[in-house]
Length: 510
Image (cartoon, rainbow, N blue to C red; front, side, top):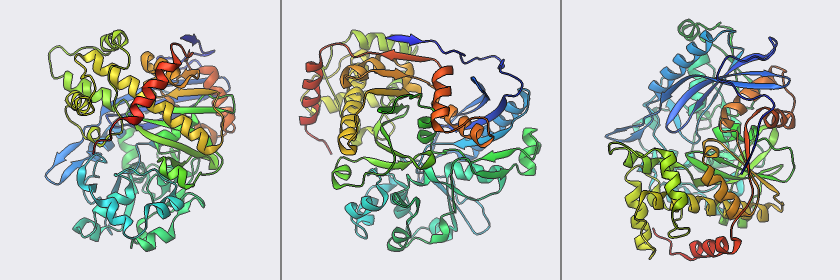
C-alpha cells in the first residue's frame, strides 16, 4: 500500500483558502448518524469542517421499525446553527440521505407518522403483490432497478388499505421531506427518485404506466428536480433558529448519498469502477445509458440516476453493516474490543477458513450478527469462526469477493473494461478491506476520500454557484486536494479464484 499526499490536505482548522472561497453546508444523513459539514471551495482548494454530528437511532414501535425523523431534523437545525457560527456565513445548503424511505403528507401538508425503516419486515410478501400486476421482467424493463425487498414500490404496496395511505396526498423521500421542512417547497430529486421502482430509467421521469398499473395516484409524486436546481430559501422560523440569513438558498444536490459519493470519485482515467463503501457497498460503473437486458436483471444490477444524465450501474451489497452489527453486539461487553485490534486479529487469522454470502436475507435485520454468521457457516458445512478476528476475516474476505463478482459482471454486461477501482466512503479507512479488494479483483485500488458523500454534495452546490466546472473538473479537484491511498494486488490469485468458486457453489439458504 502506498499513500499519495494531497497538494492541499484537508484541515480540521478553519480553511486558509483565499477569501473568495465560499462556504457551503452539506446535510449528510447516514444509517447510524447524521452530520452537517461545511466546505470551502477555491480554484485549488477543497476543505471540510464537521460542524455538528448527531446520532440516528431508529425506534421500534408496536407497528414496526421507524426512523426518528423529528429528532433528525432537530439535529439538522442544530448543525446549521453551528455552521453559521463557524464564521463567514453559509452560501448554500444541500441535503442528502439514504434512499427508498419516505414520509406521507396529508391534505394539510402534515406528516402522517414517522417514516418506516427499510429494515422493517412489513414488506415481506409485498413484492409478490406488485408482480401480480406487473411481472419482474417488465418492471425491470421500465425501471432498470435491482430487486431489493424494501424498494419504495414494495413499501407502498405494504401500505395498501391502511388509514395512513388513504389519508396521504403527497409522498416525499426523506431528503425531499427535510428540504420541504427547511424551505416549504415541494419536489423530488431525480437521483433518489430513480431508486423507488417507479421511475422510468429510459425517460428520466416518473413512469405513468407503472402508476396506472399499480393504482397509484399521480398526485402523490412531486415534480422532479435535478442536482443544481434551486429548491428555495429558508423559512422564517428556520432562519430565526439557525441564525442564518433567510435568503440563504437550499440547492438541490444528488440527494441519494451514493450519487453524491460518486460525484467525488477522484477518477482521472476513463475505465474506472467505483465502490461506495459504508453501511452498504455499492459497486459498479458510471455509464451514459441504462443496461436493461434480461441478463442484467438476472444478475440483479440496478440503473440509478447520477448527475448530468449519467447512470450508476451497480449492485447493492450488504457492506460494513455486517462488521458494525458485530461490533455493536461485542460492544455490550465491558470493555469492547477496539476496531484496530479486531482488524489486526483478522489479518492474522487463517485465509478463506469460512465465507458467507453478504446478501443472504438473514443478515438484513438488526440483531446478534456474530451468532448469525456462525450459524450460517455451520449450516453451509464450513468451519465455524471461533474468534472475533476469524469472524471479521470472514466478513472482509466475503465482501472482497462480492466486490469482485459485482465488478466483473458489471464490466461484462456493460461491455466495459476496468483498469482501476476507486473505493470511497467510510470503508476507505479499512486498510485490510481495501487490500483484500485489490487482491480479490486483481486490480489496483485507490482508497479515498472517506468523506466522498459530503464532498459531492458540496461540489454540486459550488458548481451551481459558478465556482467549479463540469464533472471531470470536480473530480480533478478532489484528486488534487484529498488524501488518497493506493493498493496493488498481491498474493495468490488462484487462491482467490478457488474461494470465489467455493462461494458460488455454496448452498443458498432461504
